[in-house]
Length: 155
Image (tube, rainbow, N blue to C red):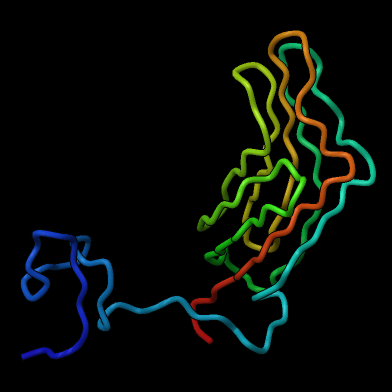
């Protein structure tokens, strides 16, 4: 008999559960941080000293605001925790892989932080959109704080 730890969804017998029915299993490889690579876990703090460009009516505009080389030859898994410092428009959010952080929005004006992971870099961009007369949220003077973890295949 295989002993270990298995955690399954409510109503599913963990002893009989397989693959996608399990939240956690000791038999499944777990995410690994490379403790010798300082970019594998870092705090990123971006203060907007200039306002990213607003999008012309009916469009969106993307501006690269930060990127770093992760040092691997493949696209690694990445986890991000976005903090919400007092007085900023950013929402607390946690997500894996690339993703989008809503900064502020109405149905017609919005801004997001877009995070893209490639085989060589992790890129953070601001996208502002404007679909009816008005202006997207103002970021000038705000500080975006992100805790980033880059996981590796083998550590």
